[in-house]
Length: 124
Image 1 (spheres, rainbow, N blue to C red):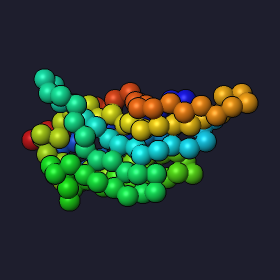
Image 2 (image 1 turned 180 degrees about the vertical axis):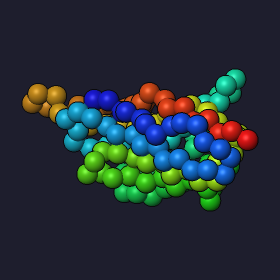
Image 3 (image 1 turned 60 degrees about the vertical axis):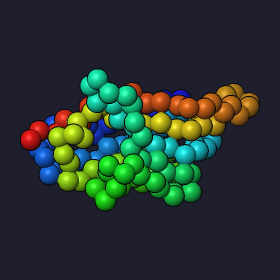
Image 4 (image 1 turned 180 degrees about the horizontal axis):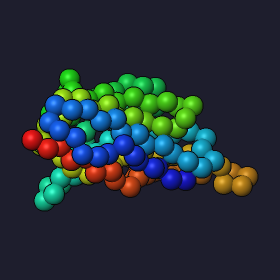
């Protein structure tokens, strides 16, 4: 099972980007999913999180600008980022609280699953 993030890039301040994170493999279910970010020299921080039923919550610094959503049929979580600011520049990581998948004849649940990061750069 892998989480594959995509959609990062270079954008001017005020612009928009949409990040995607798709889980691949023989997946049975995925719990809450989230986006985190880490800027150079800073700790990783939560950006937004969405439960398996679609209930979102956001960090204060992105509320009103970013929207998290998920498509359970596609095992994918999205982050729509609008009104981007230079301080949003960071590597963005997706996370799943838990992923349950088929392993031959049994179900296996792994916790705290991370995808690789995707770089978002916002120029002023």
